Figure 1 (tube, helix red, strand yellow):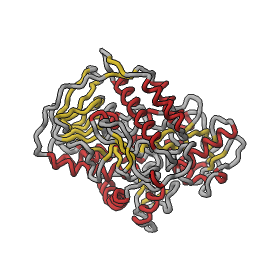
Figure 2: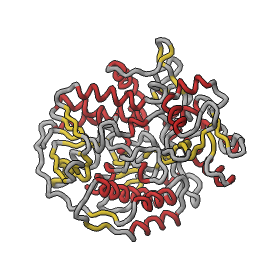
Figure 3: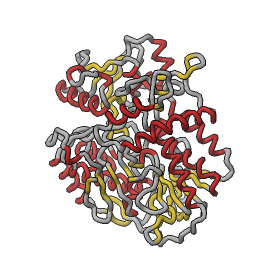
Figure 4: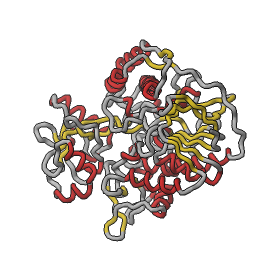
Amino acid sequence: MTPDFVVVGAGVAGLRAAIELAEAGEVLVLAKDSLRESSSEYAQGGVAVALSDDDEVELHEQDTLAAGDGLCNPEAVRVLVEEGLGVVQQLIEWGAEFDREGSKLAFGREGAHSRSRILHAQGDSTGHEISKTLYHKAASLNSIRFRSFTAVTDLLLDGGEVAGVVACDSSTRSLIPIHARAVLLATGGLGRVYWKTTNPDVATGDGVAAAYRAGAVISDIEFVQFHPTALHAEGAPSFLLSEALRGEGGYLRNGKGERFMKRYHPLEELAPRDVVSRSIAAEMQKTGDPHVYLDLTHLPPGFVRERFPRIYQTCWKYGVDLTRDPAPVVPAAHYAMGGVWTDLEGRTSLPRLFAAGEVAATGVHGANRLASNSLLEALVFGARAGRTMRQWAGAQILKGGPLPQPEFPQIREEELRRLAWDSCGITRCGEGLEAALRTLAAHPNAPCPYPNRALFELRAMKDVLWLIATCALARKESRGAHYRTDYPSKRPEFQKHSRISIATNEVSFF
């Protein structure tokens, strides 16, 4: 199996890149699960873009920089907000149906946005609509092929260059090499590393872990965003209750029914996500309650059901009628701002390896992602990476070395995820981070004669947790989504990006 290009991941970033690559050769898109199972499918909040009459690209740029808490790459932000206009308009031309008020696009507002600039589809199914549109476009191109239930476990290397990928075929439980002229990682997030997460089960950080083991530079991996409001009902998964619920007027209340956010931030419910998450955690600790409440009962019932149909139906399924009942909510791991370091064209530090979407660290999000910028980033930088990868169209396909013989963690998944939640969660401290690293070191990897997808995912999760803890320990400050109780303030000497690779396993800042 030797396509010209391999795209690992069938979410928004991967599909958008594949469409750009289609004219340059045969493209193979690999999905770990079904083609529908990706973080993109679960994106409710929408896509932020400065298309409304009262908005400007410069305002979107300013809001993104402010949310990033001094750590955004200004060039990357400029690319995002400027090129975002074109990629979204192109998406509409390809058939994406965003919500409208009459003939005009309807724009919502979310926390830390100075304008209403969030486009939604079917109220709260924006990721699904964008993914569906891109899939139909990609499937119409003869040079793009899809292969589902194929989990990429490692990268093939040849003289320091990436020669392809190693995949675990779920049906045969065998490892297969797939060679290509260039590889794009679009594997999504890593939220499954945490005990509580809004991410789907497939989000185990595979791309970051594989790139790290191959020698790629990992950047800003300590910045993990926790969504403030995940459903906390009996028997329910940590289902995300979109930021747009608060953007449309939802209140946060404690167990006594009090609105408490005014004690923590002047923007109250519309404060940046990291502030709201820490405020909820502090309120829960103060009151001893297992959760707080998101209250929409003062909004018109018809509005709630029509504006958020997917959220309403999911809450109803677990016994919460949002038109009459405040929803019990807790923070949960949601989005990784860092990942595999890339330049503005999606190039990583390894020749022939590219990355786009949540797996990549472009610097767009800085220390704290602005709400609804993630789908826009996947569209813009997925397209950029795909265009740049075309340069490898005439390159020789490398043979690659022998298949790696992997070893697997001797730790239970539940123990690892609880360790991540307790030591690398909403608040952190040096003592806890050091203890986590000692625990990981006490559970060395060992060979297994019958490897399967679950073991490869556990290996990736352990690698990612080690990276988060190591970089969080080195960043002796609090900034954005990274909050340390022993260093509660920002420090100017750390207004830099973290960087780590397997070559030294030492954190540097640049």
